[in-house]
Amino acid sequence: MERLATTLFFLLLAAASGRACNAPFQEVGDSCYYIETELKVGWSEARAFCQSMGGYELGDLAVFPSCDAFTVFTGYLAFNAPADSAFWVGAHTEFIVNNWRWVDGTVLSTGVPFFAYREGDDNEQDCAAMDSSSFFQLADFACEEQKPFVCQVPKHGHGRDTREAVRPVTLDCPADSVQVGEFCYWFSDTMKTWDEAEDHCRNNFSDNQGELFSPASCEEFTKMAHHLEVAERDKSHWVGAADATGDQEWYWVSGDPVPGGAPYWATNEPDDHYNSNYCGFMSSYRRFFLADERCTSSHYFICKLHTV
Image (tube, rainbow, N blue to C red; front, side):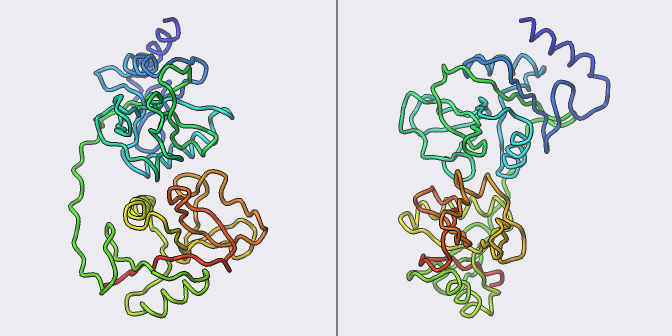
């Protein structure tokens, strides 16, 4: 109670400051977050604490409406949270196995980009925390476990995000290619080395500016991972990620750097286990997060067609 009273004092003290976020909340991306590191409580107690902080019924455990918002906050935690920690956030199953939702009611998909593992197999683990052991991606825990937590309120002048989803556009994809999200892709039915796969994409789809799949955003990567889980469930695929120098400097073939950690890489990847693992693939064994392997290995692959 004393800690809550102190927190409310800071909120009132800063109310007229004009800042986007009142203390003790910190601005991270498009929202305001408070990371409680000392108090450890169960999930329901953590939610009640957050709701008492926000005022106007806007305070709650943190939710992340997009891959981008989640990625920004995982990066923030990586630099500001204690090691070996896991923080309750506003994700739970509503006590129905595999029916994960955020506390604002929106559906929470397992796998890329939020969950590091297959969740929901244990029906007594109904609440989720951001776990440092997996790049602060979500892991499920029993709701009674005592953990620190993350609270969230909107920035001043911003309510909860109520933007309507963008209507999908239907593309006229070339023969044998498939639309996933906003692009057309071609999925191989034979396996090649990474170099052979990249040559195939560029040479066979030159009219479409083809190249190995290099996502322009984590949203694009997420849509591809979800497609693979349904349509290509048992096949790992080369993508356009490579470490050409062997110095753990990863780039997409488009020229953009591949960010480390969430939401792209599987836990403990890239591991460079053989000291020659310079190419990236979406692993069917890792819920289609990225892993690295020798470029001379053979995998199926995905060509991204930039024009149709």
